[in-house]
Length: 189
Length: 189
DNA sequence: ACTATTCTATATCAACGCTATGGAATGGCC
DNA sequence: GGCCATTCCATAGCGTTGATATAGAATAGT
Image (cartoon, rainbow over all chains, first blue to last red; front, top):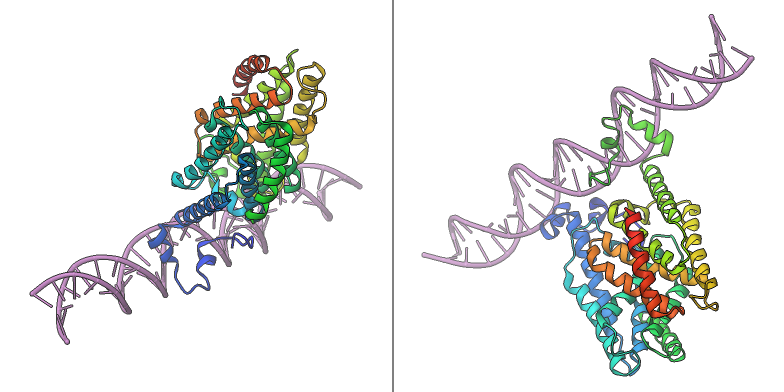
């Protein structure tokens, strides 16, 4: 129903399924609980999709691929993405989100170990910077403030700048970004 | 009511004001129209606050001040901020948002003209990168995913990295960031 | 002073999330 | 196998929501 842009209400949800409205309460504790479960599933699937991206010997490319898969997920399911980051819902289980972030931190660490990024940077902080840049772009897209075509080049140029500032060679970074971004976009649908 | 975390409904809104529910429809065309007007006012005030920051001879510091004012605005009125970027509402008038972004672009241009940032960078793209990083942080905060204390050091370190990648000297950038951020936080409440 | 127009208070509507309640399954125990 | 305790769901209904139809009051123009 989210994908079809249909209004998700308790009654429209159960109509046609054969079950009654009470099932939502016994299994999810209400409408917000159900939406929270959908959100949790969204986090879980996003995490699976990101960790499923095969790790290559180019960790910077893997970083770009993760960012592209993140963006592609928001593009294909904008309503789900908006739901996942809706603050009016009960707080999600942090496990899935933490796992996803940890994957990003590990990839940054691999890039540092391979000599692409300076060994002095804070891998956790740098990973969060990448995340926040991508997340801001996705939120502007799902909110309708910018089209995906508008945010995409900004994200890529911003990522390129951050890779460069973290020590990567500009040309190598650009090559890795192009390869990784295309790879992540394809796997993110 | 947003600031007091009260539920904003058509009836609770007009209760105590002496007017009836119909006034909302004659003046705003309904509940979504009213919320859209509130959002527009939020954009307008944010734009005023950003442009009211006095331009110093340190354009990089001014960039940081704008970012801090943006973040402080989200911290002081998280519900208004969430409302401003709620995609389920009718599209806002782009004028206020465009004006705010243009102010950021102009400040980037000043930093380039003063020799702090390389003259080869795309001022519009770079301004949007700064915006998306800050916006992503603010959205994670208002959504309850991260506390303000968690996102603040990430934003500042990310901005520092972007300034550096755009050509600024790391030490100068750090000094400007510290000064500008403190200035913007004070003016953003 | 009369008419035409605009605005609003009242009453009402369909739909919403949610809950009380009774009947239908299900599982364990002698 | 027969009985009881428990779990679970369909029905009906509650209060509230956003939105509307209508009629009466206020305003403006000639």
